[in-house]
Image: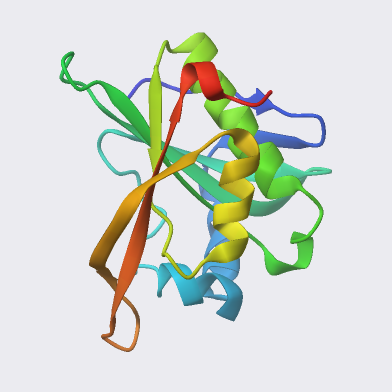
Length: 168
């Protein structure tokens, strides 16, 4: 995808991932709080993935997380999907909600998406609560959707957000 703009929320800035962000992003990704839901990063992570726009999440100029989006380009089914994680040290401050709201507002207002999806593990109640605050609704449980680091299959929760339901 083409170069992405910086996205600004009240406290956070989402800036396209650059090499300078890699060490800190890998450190956060390897932390137990993130690995619980994301497993270990690949050796080359966060290398660019075709069709995905990746952001470093900055708070007061420091990297505190990662967010990305992708799209289904078929006009009949066009939608965007998002993923993110934040350093456990900044949890509980509403930053996850701010990141999701900032990213979704960009996808709706600037890129014209009418539907956005996200698929947290069904047991990730903190993430699910965050997504609900922005307007995501549960679509259904995807049984044995992802395999964790121990090789156990975990259920996922498909959630979607329609542009008209975005809580700004």
